[in-house]
Every structure is written in C-alpha cells, then in structure tokens.
Image (cartoon, rainbow over all chains, first blue to last red; front, side):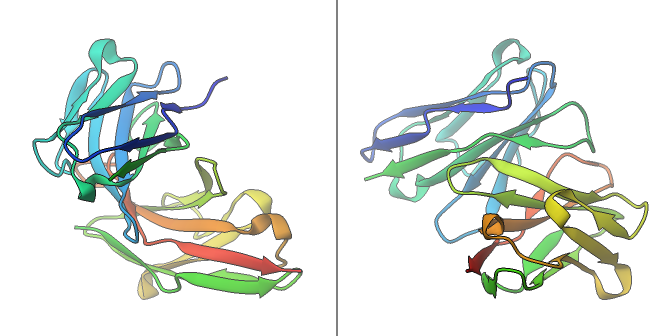
Length: 113
Length: 116
C-alpha cells in the first residue's frame, strides 16, 4: 500500500512567486493534515481536512496560504505571493479517523530566495 | 491548550549504551502522547503512542516510553543504542478533548547521534 506522498520534494522560488505543494494521502483516509517546520522552530499545525471540508484551519499563518482538497482526495497548498519567512519543510499527514495514527509524507522543502 | 517541551535538542551516545530522550507536556484534557522519528530524507514515522491504557508503552525497534502524570513526563528510552537509531525524535501531544485526535502539537525535536 502506498504511503502519503508529497510533490515536489524540494522547491526553490523567488520572493513574490507562487508555489503549489501537493499531497496524496493514503487511499481511503478521510482526514488530511498540513504541518510546517520553519528553520529552527517546532513543527506547527496548519490545517485539517475531513474529506473535502476544512475542519480546522486555525494554524494557517495568513491569507497568502490557500489549501484545497477537491473531491476529498489529494490536497494542494498554494503560497501566493511567497515571502522569505515561508521557507521551511511542509509536511502532509493522513489518518482514517480522529485519534487514529497519522501517517506522514516525506515533506516538501520550500526555499524562498 | 497543549504544549510539549523536549529538554535536549541534541543527545549523543555510544553504540550499545542506553538512550534517554526527555519530554514534558502540558494539556488541558487527558492527552494522547506519541513519539515520532524522522530519519534523513524520510517521513515522520510513529515509534509508539500512549492513549490511557498501560502507562509503560512499548514501541518499535526496542524503544519504550513511560507516561508519568504526576511529573507530566513521557520520556523515551532504549536499553542499547544502534547506529541505525541516529535520527531526529519528536515528542507529540494530542488533547483528547473536543478536537480529539485532530491537531498534533510537536516538541522541538531531539537529534540523536550514535557514536561507534
């Protein structure tokens, strides 16, 4: 069974550009989460989808970040326009239900220059 | 509100010696506690979890952790380190309150180095 996959694994963009990160959860997992680790800081929660609905987006830093999960399958996280402080590793996780194990992807390392 | 403190950002041990990675938490509700490990260029992998059953939890690769409510601690231990244990370890808490099991709160991570 395929795990959680994230694309791309690395992305280097210039300040002001747009970047879209993609996450494919484990098939059948209704719950999908985005987390971020900025350099030198803790891994922080961004948001949580249940199927295609945003259950909790309290961790989204500002309106430059837009997450979608069309059809309740894969999810995208778009940053527009990117700023230097957006650099970090973006993790996606999925689970079959609340309280069950969350499986993480390898992360996307985003560098904004 | 919930928070996690990993007391050591780096731990270095010799192969074959015990490992102790320390973690303290705070939580408004009855917490679920986890340890995740991240090897280089890999995703986060669950080592073990505590969800209110036995306070001594056994995980994969010989790791175990003990939930101590009086000390609000969940330290990770292993009797004998292997070179393959070198990685970054994260202590994680999830409140089993209104948003049970949804949002994970991570500690800052402990990088474990194992010397031959």
